[in-house]
Length: 66
Image 1 (cartoon, rainbow, N blue to C red):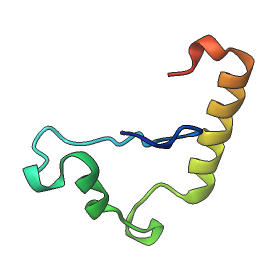
Image 2 (cartoon, helix red, strand yellow):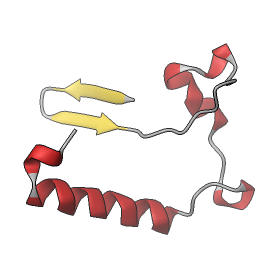
Image 3 (cartoon, rainbow, N blue to C red):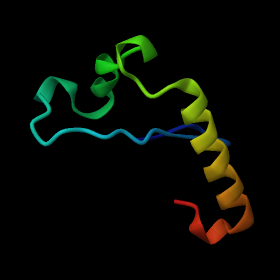
């Protein structure tokens, strides 16, 4: 999902979704399924590491940016 909330702000979420995802959770409604680390979500440290990797990759090669 990509949210362009202002001319200078682009916010992207990469969300893995099963093929049988109920219709009520499609699009931005998928956030209703958010879980905590205790319930099995990816740990914040891993998410932060991925974000930093993407930032460095895109900064080094802007053509690889989505």
